[in-house]
Image 1 (cartoon, one colour):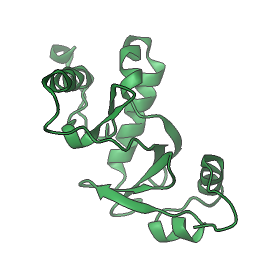
Image 2 (spheres, helix red, strand yellow; image 1 turned 90 degrees about the horizontal axis):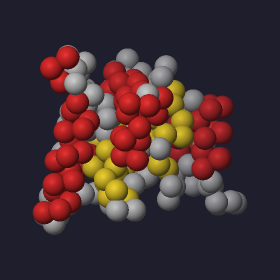
Image 3 (cartoon, one colour; image 1 turned 60 degrees about the vertical axis):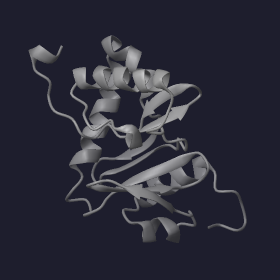
Image 4 (cartoon, one colour; image 1 turned 135 degrees about the horizontal axis):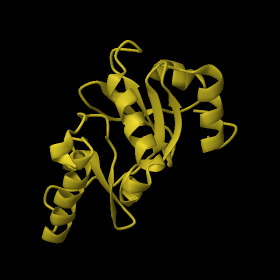
Length: 167
């Protein structure tokens, strides 16, 4: 990590924009401390600073379908007035690189517990239903975070195209 200054969000986004790193080694070579925070079936996740995290395709740029789909869903939620009710539940995206399958978003540290209170479990169930209506699946507790008393779906990359019966 850079010793001479705090690694700011602006610095991180600038480095990704300028150098387009695609591996954790390349990210660290830019002076950004990438801390492993998990992985899914197709992507690694790294915390970049206290505010940001990055998702990187496990198998490189040839396997970026999940990030591509996630970007499509988040853009649709932010653009479509009919989906405005989902905006507060979608992660804030700071940078995307569709060519390499990279996405930087706000880091939400508090994972929803499976042993949470019944009211939160009901909110989670309703959140899953809302996202399933637009085709997003895989919103198990590990893909949902609690932030400012809201549930945030931090992985929107698994989805299908809903048919009329899902509207």
